[in-house]
Image (cartoon, rainbow over all chains, first blue to last red; front, side, top):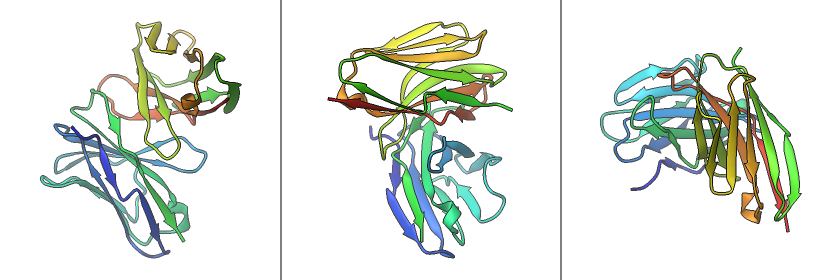
Length: 113
Length: 113
């Protein structure tokens, strides 16, 4: 049973390009959470999704950021027109339910040049 | 405002020594408190989880304590090993049913030979 899989591990984008971060939850997990970790800061909640539904996106920036978790396939965090301030580590976690233990992936380190 | 503060920010100890990391939180209402270990370039891995009614929880050489009255927790590491070098993050969950973890910024521990 593989853990939470995120890819790519490292992503470099030029300003103005789009970044797509993927997260495959653990087998049997239907709840996915995305967090962002800026340098020297703690992880910050971005969005919580269940299959085909966004439950809470209160931590997502209002513009340029979107997330989905389709019926089939991984969850995707999409950042349009990236800026230097988007450079961070983006972590995905998954759980069986909202009150159960969440397990984290290895993260995707996005660098905007 | 819900916050989790950790101290010290960083710590260097010699292999074999013990150390204690501190966590103060203002999260209310409180559901549970977790300690995570995050190796450089990896995702957080859970060490312990404590609910309101628990005072102490051990996991091998890691022992966590919780004082819900003073809203303080500590993580004690016994007989440190080189592999303990990592960031240790205190994470507090709001009342049951809420998935939004509040992360501390972590204590960076370096164990030297």
